Image: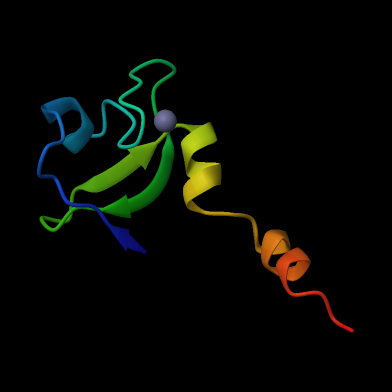
Length: 66
Ligand SMILES: [Zn+2]
């Protein structure tokens, strides 16, 4: 679970109304990518969440078995 630093983030981002990565408010961010030190949930849009939380499959690709 990632912890995000609310410093420099907008109120909308801290309240889960905007993506914590790209500030996008619409479509509404709905993927929980972590939390803030005060236990508020950090939400990101699908695109950013994918970049933040790479699929487990990516790890397999990065370390191929011989
Ligand atoms: Zn985003």
